[in-house]
Amino acid sequence: MSEVVSRANHSAAQHHTGPTSRRVTRALSAGACLWALMLGGAGETQAQVADLDVRTTVFTEPSPDSEMTVLNPSIRLSVTPWDALSVHAGYEADIVSGASEPTKSGGISPDIVSHASVTDVRHVASGGITLRRKETTLSVSYGYGTESDYRSQSISVSGATEFLKRNTRLELSYSRGFDQVCNINYAASLSPTLRPRLDSSTGCFTSADDRQTDDVDLDSFQGAWTQTWTPVLATQLVLTGGLQHGFLGNPYRAVVIGPGGQLAQEHHPENRARGAAALRMRYYIKGMDTAVGLGVRGYSDTWDVLSQTYELEAERYLLKWLRLLVRGRYYRQSGALFWSDDYTGGEPKSGPRGQYWTGDRELSPLSSYLLGGRVLMNFHGRPGDRVIGMFLDLDASFGLDVIKTNLDEFTWAGGEVNDTFATVASVGLGASF
Amino acid sequence: MRKVSKLLLIGVACTSSVGCVTVRPEQRAVLADPIMRFDGNAEEESARQHVLENREGSFGGGSVEGGGCGCN
Image (cartoon, rainbow over all chains, first blue to last red; front, side):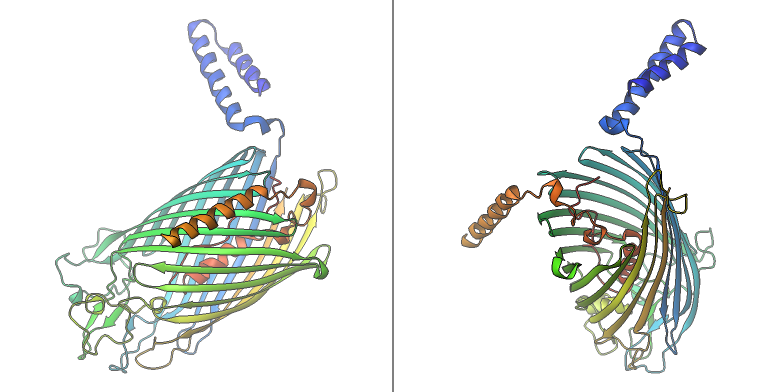
């Protein structure tokens, strides 16, 4: 710490003399002191580690009518020049191609089933810093995402501390999102029942007369308590809250709301408050040399969607450098208060189903099963004995999950939906220099 | 009132029991292993959560860092 200050002083003295030089010297000293304070007591140890993670995830939803593929390549670089400071930057993309259903109808209008082709690319760039001092960690990050019809910005801050001899860890985080969604330009006074859907992203985020931009504000709060109970047992409790405000529907989707086939753009409430609580446990079974994880999560929101999630996973070493993980997950949710598969059956003019309408299957009652696993190869090195003469740590992973969704009520114009099976494959490579 | 008292009692008992828990550093060999971490492979988990949140009506409650390693 003092070396930094003295070097700064010496450097300034070499180039300036007189009152100006003293002011510059004082400013540099103050800056150096601030920097040194920020680095804290751990500053003597220079970590100088860079972590690189390159990953690609492929989501496929095979279907005779509504096939969907999403390719998600990502790269993340984290540099830790000192133990007290890490800086990270990342980029990822969602490359979407497939089909979607721009019109949702129930059984009364069976001829209205259309599948539109969808191609889009979402780019997300992010960056941030993490400061550490003894048992405390502070992080700030920023992300910017853009696609043809949606823009997002988010700022996240989080703080974590460990105490009770590091057996207890508490973390609090908050993130704020400032999103914008492209929509068709209609007068605010136009009844929702007469609003058409957006037909394409052409003209979005320009001064085109037939386009407008709607805001979506997102606030998320999270608290987590991680506790070690014995040398082989740890638990984690996570509480999450979220507030959404703005245009929360899909501007491209229209819903049949009249028996004569009258269409209107999907219409959701403008506010949604959400909350989730999750409890997880990890336990190491010595006799099997296996770590077992159990998790349960409950969720509720002001749209009356209630859900429960159960997770089970087990991971063990097959070889010193090879790990195998298998996992299962069951998820079940209720439908939103205003959910209906068919809004043409004499829905009341007042009440949630008369006021709002949706074609979103995520707001319908459903359940899903996930089965999957991951193989991970990890090679450890040391400063004097690097992997392939280059890496402190090198790992490669391959994961595969299959998801089957059961839609209790959602139909395509009364017909069965056939895109309820999906696979998620991921390949990742991580390296520490 | 009885319910509140019971909840308070349970809360106090839980808090007290946490204070008594001491896993010493030399006992952390298993806890420090990556297979015992809640965010064992954070990048992969993030991508998986992204997929799930796009197919379900709920969000939140995901794993965060910390598995009792106490080694940062």
